[in-house]
Image (cartoon, rainbow, N blue to C red; front, side, top):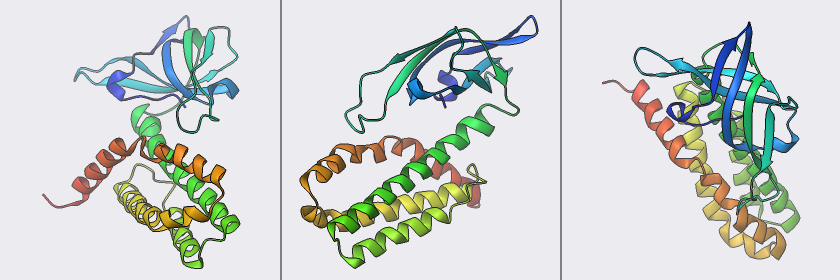
Length: 221
């Protein structure tokens, strides 16, 4: 999935001789070098109100016009590769719906949920291997229950954004409680955690904006 703020998306999608062709550059494609297909958000022009009109498309990553270049490894989670991609007259299959409302916006929330779930799952494994206290493992399992309670089928709903905000707040409290237990963990695992922990904060500002908007939509004026 290739994504950016709606107003910053300049990759263009135009119809030519009955086919939709994509042109542009995406600078950050997670796991891009392994992808066989890409979901690309592109602009089909500007609406009368000045809004960037976006559509979601499916692109075959093996097309001749797709040029993928590996980016340098990040400081955290360097094992996860990222790439930039140049798209030149690449045939695209246009997906139904609005590119922002139906694809880009929901994806951000789904991504948050999956990153949180994967992190908690890994921490539970660390807790078992390292012999952390029963109370600590119980707190982690509570976060698992909170994540499982989120409605994956309605990622754009205010209720999901509010519940996700509360779940991240709970997780932050649990991490603070678990900090002393890392002394009983093997040094390599502890270094991995210290290195990769910033990953959880990479989209914190955007998630906070969604939370504010969600509360605004449900509270009386």
